[in-house]
Image (cartoon, helix red, strand yellow):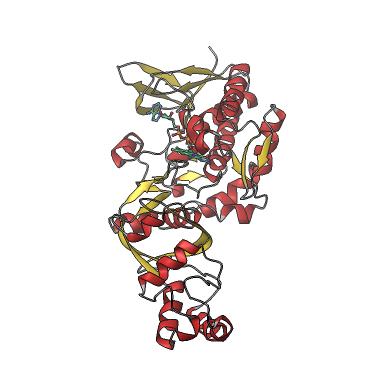
Length: 410
Ligand SMILES: Cc1cc2nc3c(=O)[nH]c(=O)nc-3n(C[C@H](O)[C@H](O)[C@H](O)COP(=O)(O)OP(=O)(O)OC[C@H]3O[C@@H](n4cnc5c(N)ncnc54)[C@H](O)[C@@H]3O)c2cc1C
């Protein structure tokens, strides 16, 4: 009988690890155990059905900075399987990727099924077996291997194991890994939008601003980028990035906090006051509501003036110093009480998972349980939106698969 490597989880990381393992050591039997009836379910729905495979960022230090959890780890492991390797790997298997203006990379087909077909085709070619409805409940180390206990009572003997079971919304979902002695950072959601129920700004739904700085009240956490006003609150990259970097802090606040927005992030309050004083004479007779000197969307400009009760019909030259100061303050530090969050439909991840200190970054092998490897979102690594989470799945899957294959060879 061939020595076996069991991969727990038929998602992106599990498939990539299984493929790497089987390719590196054809003498192995690699088996993916998937608890549901569907493989690669998240790949299918990812990126709005287009699958944002990776990000066009080709420098390791810069790439690593997109991971609120795991930045230092990614810096270490990305050189082994970087974005360039992802692009080449898919390209060599007939999946050309294209880059969008914001750096996100998608298959040229704009269809996530292309990525699924590629992964499944490659796994099949390499003889990887997939078992559906195989829900692993317990891993028992029996050196030099393991016994895996499935729901329903079946027990399997494994040489090595790669755990690629993804994120779990609840800590209890990771209890079977804690039972092995592993510490798990409690899971909380990342990549969500901010709810502003009943707030007047939601009447501007659909308005977007190219550069806004969003800050979490009471902290120094802030992110700059495009912002989108929705009918339930605030969304767009600035908000999503802030939700990722502030995932744990925001969870601790019970998703009730103040969001501070600077609509003109390039300017300080002081600079803006000076600019307004200089601009006022040249704008003279024009009505403040009709003449917005900063290129903000007209509906937003009118809304902001109304918020501080400056009449839109007032000529610029009649706007007094106090109102100019209030306007400058509003434009650089506008505040909104956030009450709750909404999961971002395009991409969603869990912050938390198996603590990195107990995993070897060279091999993704547990430092506590020899022969047990990890890959993907089950680890305490998560990225911001834009293809960074799949890149983490490819890189960790690559290392775990290769290492498991070599170890069984040895
Ligand atoms: C809607 C949505 C869109 C997204 N879009 C993007 C995107 O475009 N780009 C991007 O980079 N990221 C995206 N992400 C994030 C990305 O999908 C995940 O980070 C990635 O799928 C993680 O891969 P994984 O293999 O680690 O986990 P998963 O994809 O979650 O796979 C884990 C698998 O393990 C199985 N499993 C769990 N426990 C067991 C068990 N005990 N026994 C057997 N099987 C088990 C699960 O059923 C699942 O199939 C998106 C996420 C969502 C939810």
